[in-house]
Image 1 (cartoon, helix red, strand yellow):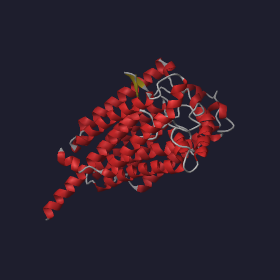
Image 2: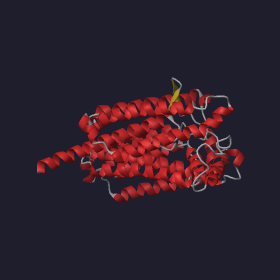
Image 3: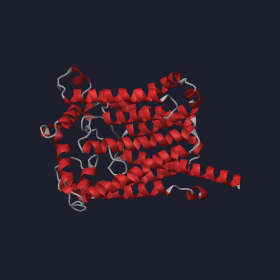
Image 4: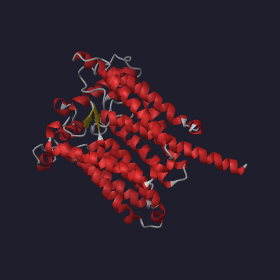
Length: 398
């Protein structure tokens, strides 16, 4: 165990530590004014974030200390997949039989002991482990051209998870699951032309869907069937934020104001204007807007650079490890982080529809922070495994 800690990857550990610390500071800054206005303790969300970070550090440590082969063992993968399906089914039950439990138009959380669990966060990691397990075992068959029969079962299972997420409705979560699937399929050994065709179809379908929802009628049958009125407001606000400022566009408009107020160097920590009642729930998916107002473009750039280092390191570890399943796990985790950042930053800049996706390590959020830190633990484990194997090879050659 002591030797494993000596092989720890500081290119992952240092950026994550800085981001979690900065995230706690910004959660406190973004939420303290709102809490003070309602007579609640100003440190309420800060304390919860620190507790969640501690839990995430513990689960990340467990993931780091696991024997690396466990990550692609059948029983381990199927356990997490089964747990994910059970939690997602519970959410669908709440959606059908207890629709009043919806928050911001979606039933995406299960409350346990005062904390909330978002099963779609667990679904992201469970899907990565499952696809890496399947494609890792069948990689030789894929390279021989037998990819269609090998893709059928994984695509079906991934599709079921996406549908369950979309019915909550969590369009952002469903989109992330889809993109994770596409990246791992592309890395599994199928012809690049096939992968390109899937990506092209996805982009065309997404663009058509955005255009439809941006101009859809709230009374249309499809909107009533899936209870998508709140999501319709978000898509229409994306297309016309200032015209619909009082009907879904207020978050995006105030995000623009926050970014504009911050300038290059910001107004200083704690001095945001938009967090004082203008930007709803500023400590969640719009926390980067508050960060831009308080720390400026320079502060946001530092955060994005740290996140970019984690993503690039994820892919680099995946390229170095000489084991197909472990390599795919690294690619999947790197993709998960990249897509979440893309959706979060794109949403607050008005480049993408607002999907409610949190910013990894920075936003307040239970399952998101815990799963992110657990994923880092998995990456550190694989990195240590790769370094240990390289050292053994070097000793043999001496």
